[in-house]
Length: 276
Image (cartoon, rainbow, N blue to C red):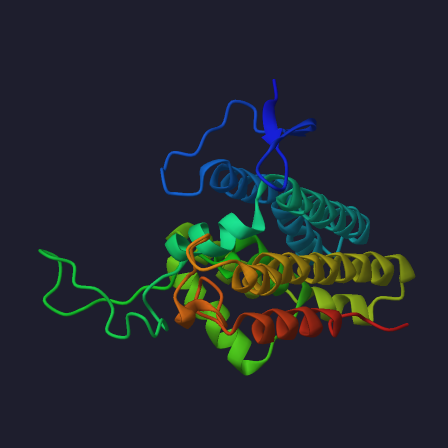
């Protein structure tokens, strides 16, 4: 069973179908079908990552038992999963209107930490006598990307690493524990470097390339839905379309300086390739 999709401009697209299989968002925020598309496409990206998580566990098992055949299969499975995540992410273009995302949805995804519009955070009556500050929703809060980085030994810049580790505070505790366990496993990169099997190096590099490509495509989507949408919103006549607070324009919903952060993470991922 398939749920009918919607075109990029918010009009119904007969040739475009979103494989949501009876799924509906459990929250209600402004944004209409674009919000629904944003949530469900994001869910499909996470769903596509499931075989990659299984492959991560298999790879660690293979490393501990020095089973290169199993390790090779696991790396093939991981690269395929990241490729499927990329394909799922591309559906964002079909189901989310950039104008609606930029002027409506993004405001509700943004938090009140590192947000100049709310520098002191928010008071939670009955919870705390002091204002509290929390980051908004961010792709950096995805547990799977952190796990893949740890397995592949990707080394991000100090600033990017600090932000990524802060985003782990928003993950379920078992997810944080899994990422920690992956980081403490035998080094996959060192095993590849010491191995005489060129298949392992090739499979490893396929994983790194797939992850870098995924991040490049994420940058393209962010550019379309923030930078380009911002320019188009500025061209609209006053009052014809909403505009988010100026404090959000240079930052992602999680509070990072979005393009600097995303490009840094993408570039450091590429640096993880192992040369022949």
